[in-house]
Amino acid sequence: MARRDIIFLSVLAFLAGLTAAGNVLNFPTVLLGGFLFFIALGGRLGGPRRGVCFLLFLCAGFWYYHLFFAYRAEQRELPATGERWQAEITAAERRESYTLATGSLQPPYRGQIQMLLPRYPDRKYGEVIAATEPILPAPDLTGLPFVRYPSVELLTDQGGNPLRRHLLGLREASISHFRQILPQAEAALLAGITFGARADFGEDLRQAMARSGTVHLVALSGYNIAVLINVLEKILRGFLPRKICFVALVSGIIGFVFLTALEPSIIRAALMGFLAVLALETGRLYDFRNSMVLAAAAMSLFSPTLIVRDLGFQLSFLSLLGIAYLAPRLAAMVRWTDHLAGNGWRAIILLTMAAQLAVWPVLVLAFGSFSLSAPLANLLILPLIPLTMGFGFLFAVAAWFLPLLDFFGAAIGRLVLGYELQVVRILGQPNWVMNVGALSVSAAVVYYGALGYWLFRSPKISPVAIPLEQQ
Image 1 (cartoon, rainbow, N blue to C red):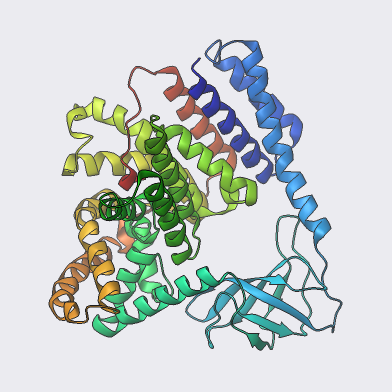
Image 2 (cartoon, helix red, strand yellow; image 1 turned 60 degrees about the vertical axis):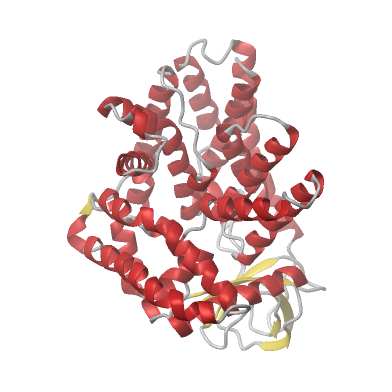
């Protein structure tokens, strides 16, 4: 077995251990499941020693999950009832009627808390607030202490990382500019596609995107990173030494992640983009499969619940696996293999179907249904997403440097965004959704186990090499 295969399976076993622990499986069950999987694969893992090694990584993931949250709870120190406390806002997600914020308690107290705050005034990253409302204990070991609608006093808005604070301010200014030159729905969609911002989405639009299978369009991913890398590389390669250009590219990736409010999907894509740039800089081959699982493992080290409770992270991770491993087999079945690497309608259908096959159990577990219109909706919208993102970046630049560009670009932007919204609304009607009722976690585990076993036992078709913009 090649070294890259050993790395892949070892990291995958670690992630499987995290997943098992997050789904409250006990240790003997996890160990037995790993052992049975090893037996089922026969000698494909390269002998008993490597099989034992993979079982150890499985156990390491299981115990890391429990030890991480036990240590976090041990380090937490909450104020007593009636005591005044201060917290620095580290994340704020605005909804239609409220803001869900995460804060870091200031000395003499320690730990992270969640806060349910009024929708107005807007709360931003870096604000330090004070209150006396009691902080409720965490509902379980993996949760955070919680406080509902405290009467807060703003102490300062200059906390947090200065670079991230200014980048988020630039993001908000660009989104505000979108609202000035575009209708409300079009501005909200453009902000979602460009920056991943969904605060202005109405409930109707949220539901339509969920029912049409187009939610991923506003979850930033590899395309945004690919655009950033390509633009920076073309600008910098001509007059900067290679090593300085590499540092500039990495700095640009980090800055863009800060600009997008640290969403899991963009962090995953940024890590994979960094590995791609690093491979180019060091003259090594870029391995998509390993970079994907290494990115997932790196993120899970800091937030083990990502792989279990964050739906966006799960869908992003599983859809990539589906595109890489299921798409080539689907293409072979319908004899479209030659079209898989292109950007035509056949490739869009294959990639969409592969992603849907990989994620439907998770969607059913979360919503009790899945979209029948997703392949058609993506076929009609995906070819226009590069152009839409181009408008987003154009308008963001125009807000600061070239205001006249608004006059020429806004009319075309309205047409493109209006068309995309119409597709979402038409194919997001309730009659396009199949309600399948409840699906047990055990059934989902059996489905993915059978799918993984089938893929692992039939290696005749190589996984597709996914361009960074599709990651």
